Image (cartoon, rainbow, N blue to C red):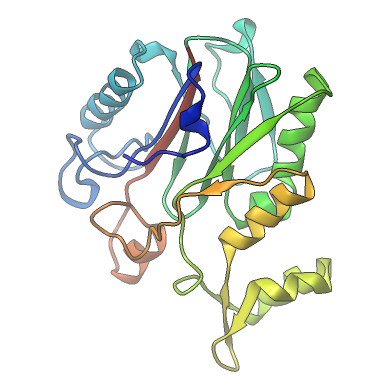
Length: 250
């Protein structure tokens, strides 16, 4: 389990970036696989989510997860939509006693806290979501509740730039949007680049005047701690688990 130094200072919230350890799943999914979308045994996934709920000191039904699709959709969780399927890649809420959860396996989990208005949030920021401004949209959603904010953010474990190899087409997509995006790429050879997703996401937060702290861990490298979509793909594994990051207001 990993924690933000900034977020840990606040006594009225509880958060955690969970590793893949201490769960009930077997094989590819060993052991704390929280991905309902994986092909893991559903009973084991439920046991894992119950473990997370206990660690967050909430009842199982109070851990709110999203159906993530790499979109830029943000939803505010209220009493009237608690029991619906949440189709988004970011959530915010003022509700107390509920934990918001984001699932990742190389993408960036971001946890947020607006200390002035007691609003918590989480973001699933893969390259698609970050590219289509999910971070900006989430911050604007928080500010639409109250424009007077003090927002803290932590960028969690994700794939490191040394392991995020992309092709020329990917590179050109970013450069077409802005030539300034060139700084996030490192040329590996004539056909491949290395992409710094963490830096790209951190700068998107800075554009919204939010300086985040970082859990600078590489999900690809640390196979004992994290699931990784890319590592599983390279190893020709049929599927992969997902880690969970959570935040709640006490």
